[in-house]
Amino acid sequence: KAGVTQTPRYLIKTRGQQVTLSCSPISGHRSVSWYQQTPGQGLQFLFEYFSETQRNKGNFPGRFSGRQFSNSRSEMNVSTLELGDSALYLCASSLASQKDTQYFGPGTRLTVL
Amino acid sequence: SQQGEEDPQALSIQEGENATMNCSYKTSINNLQWYRQNSGRGLVHLILIRSNEREKHSGRLRVTLDTSKKSSSLLITASRAADTASYFCATPIIKAAGNKLTFGGGTRVLVKP
Image: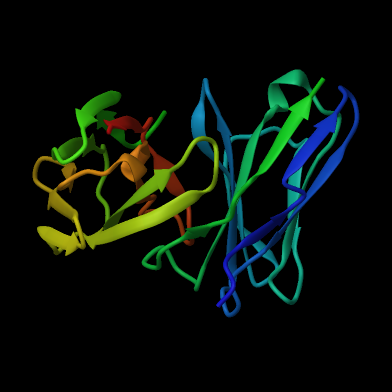
């Protein structure tokens, strides 16, 4: 089976712009989660989608949003970018529940100038 | 705040030696997962240990779990230069309906040839 894929791999934006990141989960996986990784804050949970519904949400401002499509692919959007949004954004997929292993994609490196 | 805390934060060993790192967590769990990350790339799942298991092996990896002490350890035996990476423990939030992993700060391991 193909692994989790994320596009684009690298992105450079300027403050105030918005960005959309995409994640394709492993075939058959219905849960998709997003994480932000920065040197200062480490790995932080953004949100999780399951069957096109947001099932969990982390402590991020409303500028961060996401959605999931019927084929389980997911997108996350960050509006009005700030310098502090520069990070590695990781997507993970799993079969369904927290009892299942989460498999991560290679990440999207976002740089905000 | 992070659920897990790894110890040590960094570890430098010679090839062939064993590497041990520890993870402590705060709340009840139903499983604990270990991941490896090479230099800013995605996370690779190493092993999942359930709360009713005390020890688990996978190749050169040995994981222990002590739920009474809320701690886990990861042992890499006969280390290789390719084991150079950051290692993270992660636990699902048991009260969350779905998937929401919280990560420790990681242990950076350097294996010198």
